[in-house]
Length: 430
Image (tube, rainbow, N blue to C red; front, side, top):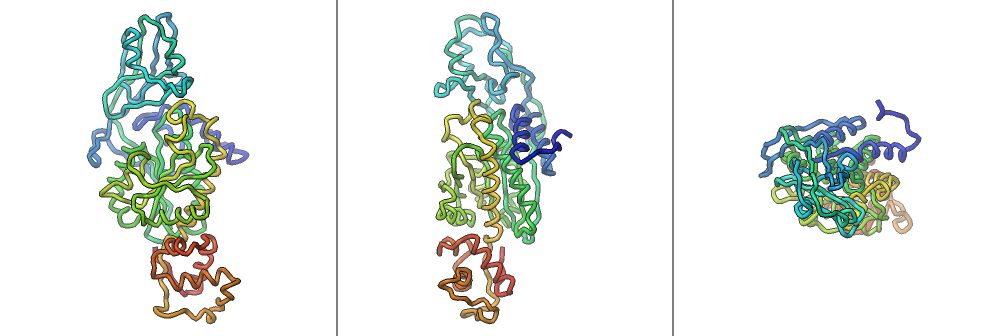
């Protein structure tokens, strides 16, 4: 199988995988999406969840599948432009079929373009309203001449299944953590393939851990409708046991630091982890909003309100190449994907070890640490200092809230708590 070839390093592997996935014509339900998720199944044994076209999910309805065999425009001088087979962004996503001779004025009503990026093809779509349309570079749009144009769109709609891929890694507690991304945009790099590639890398890292306190749900779905459908299966379980979660999107752009968009519940433990990371200048923090974003808007919506934030590097709407053919491999850097995998895996490691609550086995007063040979000079021994803080303030909230309040170091906090657990002075409840 070509996907199992040997690679010199991770950069070569992710670059190869990117090149296979990039040209596929993905949408929310179609063969391009299905082929893409099957490629990922070579590395993550996803359980496939299916939702039939027409199924109602939280007030939405799963649409029909959209398939395209070809699309193009023949100019008055018999030249082919907006050729779907050369770049699938030339066709509006979910565009209806058409084979019609039109004059220039009518043609312009069918075309979308982007003056700010005159050499780029914009990405447009109309998933839930019946529309027909194509996209074109603005510089080419300006050169269109009067005359008759033949617009050909060979698309069709059919009943099928919306596909969500889910993979679970077990931990020692009943509590869980969600890592979610989407796989439904065609031929874009940062605002599409960066998320799934990062999810794959994070999966590989977490799978290698010797032990996990939390269970991990890795999810790939079509954006918005996919997470809505997925929540019809998981909301009851998540409402009981989900400790936190991350939606991965736009993780491969050139920005130096990752940005965390907080979950809607300001006091969620996942928010406190990233508030700590902001204190350490390792993350940019953004407030929750439902006005823009990705699937965190579904996970955090009223009636659901799960502790799920979103993480990105070069964030949607904040770079000019967004939703255009300029969002390509030259813009998205494989090295940044590798950096995102490393940093996000570490952030989740902190959460896995620190998202619990300390329960002291001795009910009152100070613990006699000399009994365990743990009392060192608290002025010169930082681990002793942390042990005293955790034992003296454990009734003030979760471990992460204590760390945030007293500005403690994450790595040393893990060491201190492990020492307390090893000596059976405390237990941690997740």
